[in-house]
Amino acid sequence: MSREPLRPPRWYVISLRPSDEHEDLRHIVSQYGGALIALSPWSIRTRNTQDARDALAAALQAPHVVVTSPNAVRALRDLLAHQHPHAHTHAHAWPALPLPGQAWYAVGAATAAALREFGIAEAIAPERMDSEGLLALPQLQRFDGAALGLLTAPGGRGVLAPALQARGARVLRADIYVREPATLALGEVARLIALDAPAVLALSSAEALQRVLAQLPAAALERLRGVRVSAASPRLAGLAREMGFSDIGVAAGPGAAQLLAGYGDALGG
Image (cartoon, rainbow, N blue to C red; front, side, top):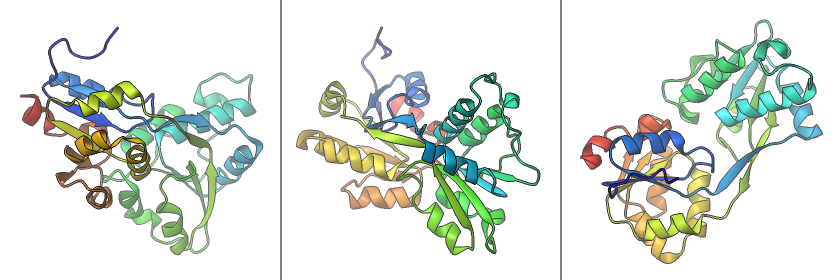
């Protein structure tokens, strides 16, 4: 059954999120008479390998733990469940986290919510829900050699580890999930080429944008570069400008509601 509106869409949101993570954007745009074009350059998979489990075990011993996305929380859950296959799927069945005196940090509200559901109620999240916002937290300014666990994926949040190391942190990185490259859906590319209404590109990942641009045919590239960009940070806005976009705004953060704030009323009519 189609999830698109029965009437012709009055506007579109173009999502670059992983293949199973479009629903929050789709829900918002559908409320305002629009539709979503899903250009997914990857899917998400937990790294259930010995190396990943060993790195996670080390990271979880650190007095500070940074979690970069809800996907990292899901991978944490999956890996701890693998270590305890007979445990129930509720958080209290797993090893007690956080450890005494341990501080947890989430890049954004969605990650903090996933950690609360997991059982870590006091995760600290910045108002500005991106790497820059996290690095601005007063708790993460100086480490004097203290260990910091970083739960993330290869290629993700590339500015975090170097910045934290420069502040004296001994970063214990655990790449516990991977983004597996995927070919863009031809039907979605065709919908982009045939755009017949205003559109907004919801931009929250530099790597996703780079991967999508590398796959699009010329006609689709031309259409995409002509749409409005809602960038999750000034850094991403600058990247979009470098890649040929001109109509760019900076959102309050990477959440679906933040990226689309105001566009429903303005474009959905």
